[in-house]
Length: 316
Image (cartoon, rainbow, N blue to C red; front, side, top):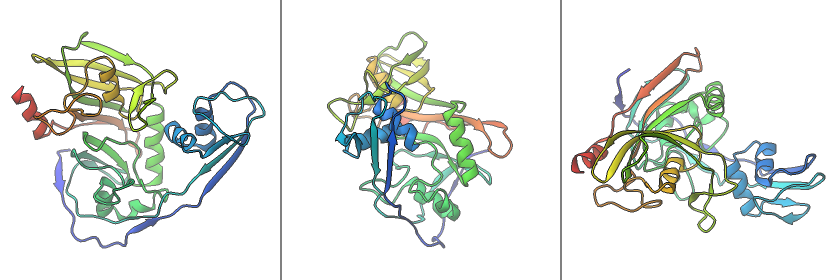
């Protein structure tokens, strides 16, 4: 289907206010040798990165004492986990134009512009992709009672491109299952510094929190498995245009992986350096393939480079 740009009028539904009760868990370890963060993630059914944050914030205790993320557990250890409730957030529908690539009764695929945050977070409770889609799909606010209704994967704020959003619980479970099984096909166009060789390869390196800067990610020993396949699209004098195909979905994975091999992404001020030509990283999710929840049919969508990235290629 061809892409279309849509806008909404004044929202006709009331804001969806999200509140949750404090959650507390206690476990007794039966098998020794497992890392604390992995154990907490599996037992509480949360992401490993969130488990690591809880441990760092002192919300996890082992035998009544504070613990470290990488601590190895012993049989009989008592694990106490406290998951604090998020601050109540009013999810109000907002009139934010979006480019819709595909839509059916189960999901929407959008071409997210750079600069748009996916969901409300600390410091920004409005003006996000979730707010925009709520204006189109008011019932989205009922999915899981979450501040991230329908969101099954994310793009960084300054990364543009294709994202899928579930419109009901069944679709969210289906898409989340496909992500877990690594059957969803993703392709990103990235401009990296330097002459990248070989032309086709893979970066296989674990990713975790930077040991000295908790706001950044890094390739670290003991991090979570991460693998990014790539192929060169075109060489320029001092740059290489590549398609990156992540097999896993770690935070900042593509940016961290290319920086780790000495080819940071153009314009990435966190893992590389700023550019006068571009106010963000040159990273665009241009290809997305998955099975439709309703029929199981595999579909694939593509999104062309946005004007700001096309202009960079013209300039260099």
